[in-house]
Image (tube, one colour):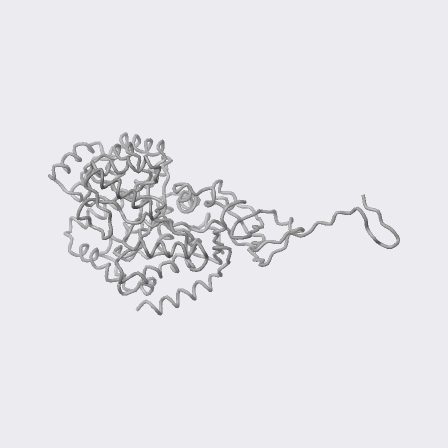
Length: 468
């Protein structure tokens, strides 16, 4: 109760003081990626974290150093690209560093670096980004890949016995990496499975390719956490997987020889068992559909006028030539088979999703992966999923929502909620109605700072002028 005296002194009234925040996103349409609901809310941010969400009318006790009117715009977590590469040797370190701008300008606030030969630089960028000294996405990295002797990719840790496996894992933990990535160019099936088992004992998150000399069941049982690309999932859906694996082990056929055999022997009953096992073991699959589309049609599509090609350093573009020449020199049958395989992979990705297997959106962008450009390729990956019949909401989940869950970072990332890190993208249109709206960016928020798209586009233009 208030007591008012003639002197107009008020005694006993509690006056609410306004609480100040760093950033107020006012009246935006907040998309809940878990439920797909959209609600007009005010998002309150301090020290780079979402502290509170309030309904539109409830701002009487709120003040902010920066108020951003998000009316009629759509707020969701910054995008995650769950498969990128920083690589190519010392001559393209700066060119790889430029990718950070491409990611940010496309609303990608987190990337999962799936192995390369620039680990020292990547760790420096990672630390600088975390401190706010460098603009770029949060980087989760595997460091060097694990493979066998004389491996395909420079910088790989080569294992040829149990001792090598333990030394490799010791080395990766000392970096420290965020997960381990296995590659299949030279590693034996035995050492591959033993590496996964050793990583499992250390509670390390693992992902990778799979030697065709082992079965998908063996890989799952050994403890893999994510499978990169769909070749290996297709193998596990073949009614003849064991027979084809034996032929591969005897070197009667090679990797590409096995593709049509596996596709022809796809069996729905086998596939459903495989999908159930993947789901039961919470194993994620990274389809990388967009790069498959690009590489399958290199013989038909001229990329000389790609808008994003002008952002690529000449050193990066030079690495594209190997895949381009292989495509142009392929036989007519090989070209036909590659395109059929890409169509099959689209159907397989949809089947995985429909069966409840978690997918991760990843572009596979970086040096050597021709015309698969950092930043924009993630949006193409999401659009590809929607074209297959996956809903825009479910496609969006494969980015930040599933990415955070896979790396066990979902307490900090993956949705717009109190307590989460404020990595946010604000869109001008509703991506749940039209997935292309993921490219219609108004603003990106990272490290407690709001970046208008115009400012990020200016950084892109500066990058275009510096690449040649």
